[in-house]
Length: 263
Image 1 (cartoon, rainbow, N blue to C red):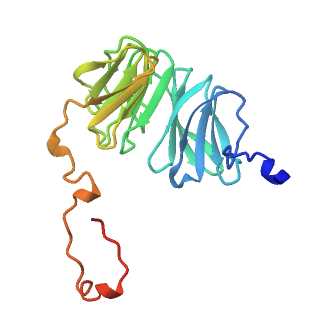
Image 2: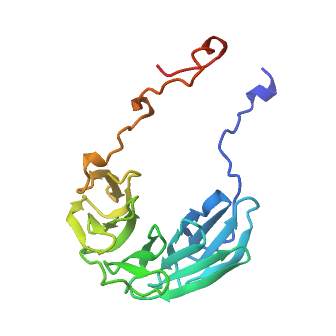
Image 3: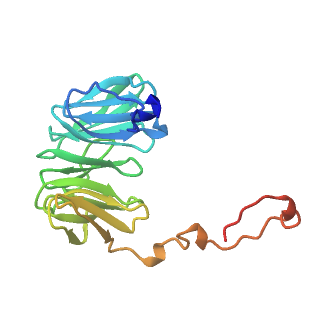
């Protein structure tokens, strides 16, 4: 056996790029549209944008007074929302040469801001805090919309917006997921009970289910109470689709074609 064949081959995947300018733990990140840039936030109090092609930071770092716990990006990638230990949120405009503060600091929470979201149209902001509340804000003025959404009895850690943007789910250390009307802030039905602290919640892509998990190492799946089976798409699988007549001439020329059809 040759020496080459005796050598073990290292099949461990290697990263394509590593960026290492943050000076403390990185807590959250998101891709910008087109996947050319990624935005990160850290315990060093900074939000940074990175070019994933060359690994270089783009623009100036965006600063909070303390750990930056969370961030969210608008669907067009032009605005970044961040929140953290300073009880505040900030809205940044992204441009390759700068990270300009558009709005903020947005004040109102009385404790750490753990999670932030944009509404689908970008007109509103949602935030969750250790002050046990969820708040909705005008994204142009930073003014609160309505009163804080209350009901949780411990820190609110995670938020998820339904695919149609009409409902919000929140997960808390009080062992519950609560569901809310995203427009009015009114609670929907009873809280969904878990066995321990919850740290994450998400809607399914169809909006039919909510999944949550936390310190008990379990994932729970719930069907949302407003779901109507009639909302489900008529065809869940490609195999359920009706037969489609072959285009004119196909049958005539089938002998000359090499075409595979599903049974």
